[in-house]
Image 1 (spheres, rainbow, N blue to C red):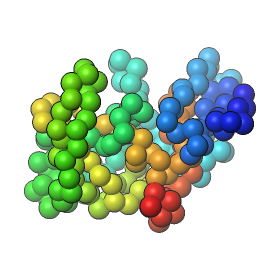
Image 2: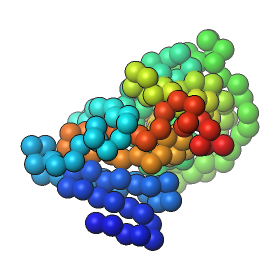
Image 3: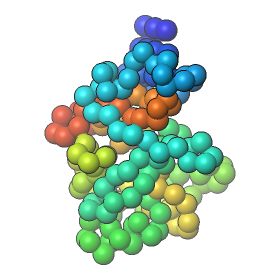
Image 4: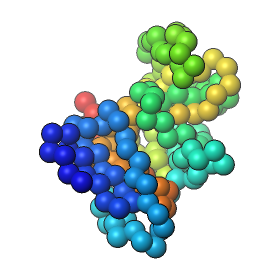
Length: 180
């Protein structure tokens, strides 16, 4: 499928979304991994395995400010959000600097004021440095969420469901420069 207006390209088990169409990430519905004729490894220079949870959500391992953690891939979130537990670890390391407050609508529809912090280093997988990122701190509970703002730094990107993987076009300085 190719839609020139939105620049969306789809293979059998992979959806590729250009920076023009980042507002919504599409998931391709594949039937079997052995039928996949396109893998993220061949389409993107950087590819990372995703872990599928029991509920079907996808998570990715990352290092935020020197702290290893799992982040739920959440295309409905704009910012990276972190749990109070992860924030406490970042705070102990001196990795987070408060930059502003934002009003955010939660998945439950409530409007909340959240503190936003700048963290100088965010690394997906073992070596995909996205540079400095802004993170919002959830006041209670919750999971660490990887929102579109961070993914846009490495766009274009794609998500494969069979096998679960995240493909990124850019890492390192190119990703940070593109985000400016």
